[in-house]
Image (tube, rainbow, N blue to C red; front, side, top):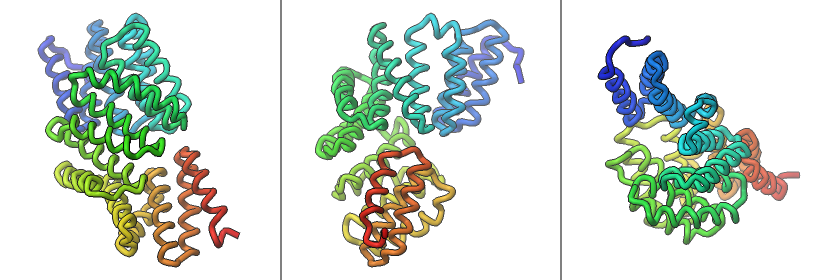
Amino acid sequence: MVIAAGAGDGILLELRARDAFAKRDYVLARNIARERAEQAAAEGDQGTWWHMTFLEAECFRDAGLFYECINTAGMLEAHALTGDSPELLSRVLTIKSVAAQGAGELSDALTFATSAVALSESAELRSEIRVSALTALVAALAENDRMDEAWQQCECLIKLLEASDDAQMAGKGYWAVGNVAFLRQDPREGVRYHQLAAEHLSPSNDLSLWAWFNRASAAMRFAAGIADTEAEDCMDRAELAASIIGLTDDVRRMNQLNRAHWHFQRGEIDEAAQLLVPICEESPSMAHQTAGEANLLLSKTLRVKGDCSAALRHLKESRAYFDQSGAKDRAAQVAAEIAGFPQAS
């Protein structure tokens, strides 16, 4: 539907779209943004068309519709306004990188982020554009198992974050740095940078992001063998936020998986198993990466309980899910465990 109205109505549509996006109603935000973009195109207002179409891409990204995000960003990349603006091009390449990473297209994610960072540096763009591009590059390098390079870029990112007055942006950046530290088997630095992220991210600014961070930080700590009070606090905050925002199936499973990790780390094997069995029964309807992690932890739990046959079965399921998710390193690690499993022969 195209609304024939004055500039005030167009501005109202833009405000409604951004309000829906802030409230994480991505379907509504996307529909309103598309309506306003079509209206702007009919009026010859290319600037508004660009920004509303970019908002569409952000909606696709945050809703997990990664290929739709990439396709929408591709439209923006081909637009004349983007070709004339290094800043707009860097933003488009950055969102393409994030979406490609979400889609498991890790090589593309690295290519897009590398180009975004090079452009932001050569054109001396605003610090927030450079931070966003560097954050995407750090994540892409880590996902491609190029940890030394990822850490080198982290050192560049940290300098920008220390000079930033945008708390939310700094929090996201420190979060990414902490993730790389954990993945480099440096939990002390991982905890340090996640603590910095926690100091900058505020539940009053974005409760969903705050919950996501706490859930992810708890998972990173448990994977590193850390089951201390801070890890429990992260887990508790994520669960509290979920009770306020609303509990999707994915969030419920991830919170339960964290809680199962907590019990396993503390030697509470029966409690861990009670949480993991129903999670793993839902494996076919879960994200492949989450299903791989859940089945791997259940395998470890069952092995401690002495049920080696079931443990091996879930270990094989874990490998299959990691293969499906494109997590080649995790799949290889599980394959090595299977090869050394007592009943593997």
